[in-house]
Image (cartoon, rainbow, N blue to C red; front, side, top):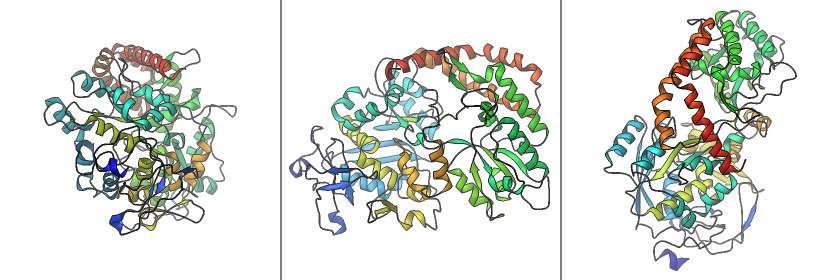
Length: 562
């Protein structure tokens, strides 16, 4: 391997397994152990010498990818997309994890990332076909139509052969998650971009409603499990001084975070099997719930609650943080389980006894079996452009950061010795930089401050997420939801015709659907006009969108073998 490292890029056939490495730049003596322990406790035997890799800490399973990918300093690639989600930290300036990835792979990345107006910048650059980066995050971010747009006009190159010949870890990821491969595959059979993958972490992280358990205790109430019980709790929160400040009526029983229309999460209380607007019935038919008569029942209930002051009139959730801090919010709708912790922190400034807990899925009655739907499996797409002069190096680098065990450890845990260490039992323990960081008080922010949990080539680990929240109520909520959530409707790539129709119809239609949901709930539109609303939605192309989703679902079934 030393010879290979000094002669540039290595062949994909070389095998590198786990061993323990310490960096010469740190002044430590290089060692090779016979075995290394993965974060899940699995022991993998080191079969080859990895002493040519410049690395800090343990080198984990590379899955058949050889490092370094090329002789350090010989290849530079450019990447363009979103910047970090950590205030004051930019990939453009370099982070500890980025530097470690470069040490291990030998590939220098020139970062061109943005924290605002990124879609506009990307669309302008990609439309001009000038100054294209080697790797790019594809706009628009709220749909996957960019894959067809930029593969059709020659911006993106097909990745099939590159993956087959150079990316053993991506191949394994596709084998493990056929749904991922399906959602990366265009209608012509080519893969032009890789989807950001949340299929692992979303097995663990429920996204639903959480409630003030201490308010329930104050009023002697049980956790609501049916829609009728939920109504009774909302009324009690409103009328019985749930927060105990002597001012009954200042409480906000139910608030939404990102728009009141996300109260559709309560649709399981009205006969739906999941809280997903897109769903497939037992006969294999594709439905969009918001234009069905059954959906009207939920809107009627929500309108009643809103008219009685049980739902916040802060429709977009702009005051949610302030209201939580002021100890006013009983239930928060549409938030992942981990945000309970931050809501607790906010509310504790006014009430040290605050205790938000995750709610069970609301049922029609006590015999209900409805489940919540997992969050989306994918998030954004990433491709290699036709301007890339070293696509083999690019796909190997992507294989490393996106799909290898070693890359995953850097991605999700950071750098050994900096953000985590192993205890005497071989278990990962985060350092004070993560658990006691005065600047970045949440573990996620602390990890992102060094470049972990990035925005590029997303592949979040559920195991790492659970480690961050080990021993907390978040872990309890996630364990309760694990294996008890349904997969969401798959977001397949469209044909050129489907993408054209979708982009011409869905933006205006979805805006109309959301606006009418809000109007029905707050009462500015009578529910007597629900049939007219459905007719209008159909006239705007609702049935065409349903037919597109049906065709895409059929292709999904063919690929995953269902």
